[in-house]
Each structure stands twice: as structure tokens, then as C-alpha cells.
Amino acid sequence: MDAKTHIVVGKFLRPHGIDGRIKLASYTDPVDSIASYTPWLLESGRVIKPHSLKPTDKFFIVELEGITSREHATQLTNSLIYIPQDQLPPLPEGRYYWHQLHGLEVYNLQSNLLGTVDYLTEGAQYPLIVVKRPGKVDILIPYTDKIVTQVNLTSNTMIVNWLNPDTL
Image 1 (cartoon, helix red, strand yellow):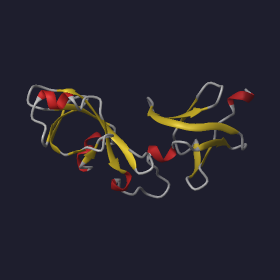
Image 2 (tube, rainbow, N blue to C red; image 1 turned 90 degrees about the vertical axis):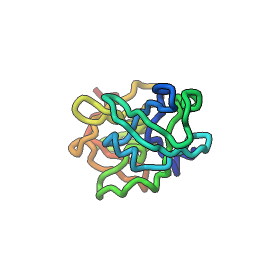
Image 3 (cartoon, rainbow, N blue to C red; image 1 turned 180 degrees about the vertical axis):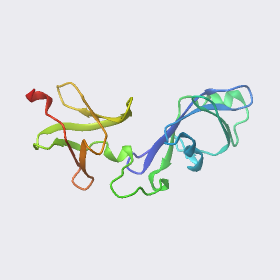
Image 4 (cartoon, rainbow, N blue to C red; image 1 turned 30 degrees about the vertical axis):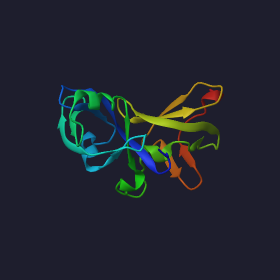
């Protein structure tokens, strides 16, 4: 899958039962919105259509069209689920999907290059930006409006209200 045109929205885990059902981890927010992005594409190019999704505490149990046995479901284990990025609904001005921030150069208010956005992850209170710095320890920066002051996808930059840890 081309990362410029497709995005990962979930992952098949392991089969559930003997009739072809499989566990699914959703990477969408809210998690149940994965059901609205169909059909699903696998890295192999295979198209998968969900028939039903049943939520559990941590994942979904999914019935898929054409998957009727545990053996068929086993072949999907650990497969990532992709959708075309153009299926994502537009966001309000100033809001971004996490995948759009990957690779942005991160500068602080003093114009010091801190590193590059590697990924975002859920923190206890706020999402966290993981900033990669070659040869140095990664920086974790809370993704809040007070800290992230500017995102410019055109110039591939992010400005943050954050000290340069190398000067401390």
C-alpha cells in the first residue's frame, strides 16, 4: 500500500471460533467508526468486506464476506487494514489527522530544530508527539493547542512552545 494514498485503520488479530470470525483492533477514533470505512484493503491488494462487527472490551469480533472457516480467518491474522485516504471526512480548519503530521520538522519558538515527528501516541492526559532526533534521545511533546502553536503541511513544519532539551 502506498502511504501517500492509503492509511492503516486497523489490524486483524486472531480467529475467534471455528466459523471464520476474527478479532479486530481498530485504530480509528472513535473506534467504531472503522465500520464506516469499507471496503477494507490488505497490503496484498485483497479487498475485504465486513458483514458484521461486534464490539468487546478491547476489540471487535468481525464476520467477513467470503470467510467461513477458521482456516480462512487464520490467513488474515496480523494483517493491517487500509483504506484510501480520500475516504476520511474533512476536518475543521486547524485540525489534522495524525498521519498528516508524520515527518514534519519540529521547531520551537526560538527557531531551533528539535527533530522530526515520528508518530503520535495516546498519553495519559493528551496525545504525545514522538520527535526523533538523530543520535539523541526522542522527545515526547504533548499535543495541545497551547504547545503546538502552528502546523504547516505545505512547508512540512510544526512550531511548538517547547524548550530545546540540548540547552538545559
